[in-house]
Image (tube, rainbow, N blue to C red; front, side, top):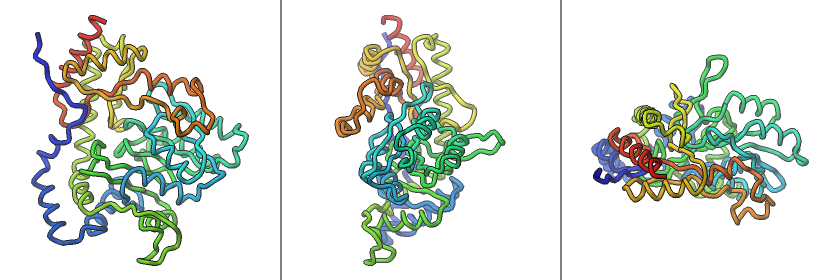
Length: 389
């Protein structure tokens, strides 16, 4: 009988071992300087990440949720307005709309990669009874897979609607245009939000977020909103928030940004391994898995498979746990069915692809330092499960 291994869904400690010396050096410099809020590391990180993405302005904030909330406010989306988004995402995507007193319009997702269905987005923009009050769209590049940026840009221009890209899981992903050009996720929208939660492809050792834009006026507004709406200290143009990225996180993120391309390539490699192992074991007849792209359309923040039904998914999850393998469910309930959004009037059955995804998907271990041996063990155990299922 094979010895049981312990395979985590994500392990931050392995990465830390490789960058520990640089992290401690940078942290010592921060603490020695005594400048721990909005210091040189914050300024340099903003400059470095804007260069990486190819945008003019990067405004760091306290977390990804604030990045979304401030972006909605900066676009003057307010009570009486509507914003189209997906029900299959982290809560903050929709709460950023509601916290600004606007109303989300949910649209179902595409089946293969779980991103918002742009066909349905266009249908809503054309036919919704209050289409003139639709002020924005928040597409999510879910699990690291880029939404079709070329089409998104066309929708933005054709319907004169603002775009906030939710890039919390997709930093470094790209879309290849029909012209041959390519753009990073987070460069098409009017404002675009990133998260540096520790598990992200670019993650800190605490919370952190970012808003990026090529619009100078919007950038200036977000900069004010993150410091209580102040244009200069103690002079407030509007009511904003205390939402600053601290110097410690910026110092760490600067180190990790230099390694981000390496982290991404490792994740893509891990995805290739999973796909190869599944095919070799004949598991593709039981599970669907994200097909590999030979570019950065997908940066695999999560590696998510889907199975036939909820019962099978839950049994597989339990079996893997018993064998030391950690998995995750992202997400167990669509936002349209969350209790706090009951007033929106959605019901079960409204978004069948989203609801199917909540019942049938399972995230497998995925992080740059995951070993091939660990992946082989995961796939062997999945094969073992289906041999007796």
